[in-house]
Length: 260
Image (cartoon, rainbow, N blue to C red; front, side, top):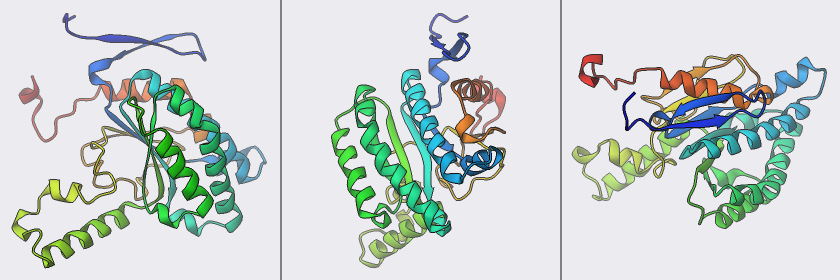
């Protein structure tokens, strides 16, 4: 073993096992599509709201686990632009859970040195949710640990469309020359302009699709799909996903020989 290879031992409370994770190959930016709350509740003969309430508890556990591991960026697909089309009762419940969770978790965020961030069309959120979100973001803005980003009223196609429109206006006003448009300029007009590209994307519930989430930012991400509904997603599942990521060879278009 090379002397400069750094290891950490991360304790799994659930089964008292020790999982070894290589610090140098931890994903810098982890994104999660938290899917399956409704189906989880249906399997138990409960209303969908029960699944969302349990899903909130999983969010808290996962955020704390990621912070303890030393991940720098965690982005959660919390509410998509398409989710506005769900039944009004469910949407209202999700917004209520958002407000109550933000109020409850402010202390947890500060205790774990976590900075809250958001991406999406947050102006479309109800006033109470919008106000609480901005308040918690302000009160955690000085934290220097992990950045937790909530994708709220978010759709990647809308994000890209908005970026193109902004760039077109700047081209029209001679602020940007068409020939100078590159990936950096596009990045600078996305919601995620202050975030690095995604390294690992996890989706729960067994579905194998991206659902309009961070389409530009996952260009070279490793994708990990797990057949577990979000409320049942555990610390052990997270560790397994990261270990799987660490065992993959990320070539970014190069050959294996070029990486050695």
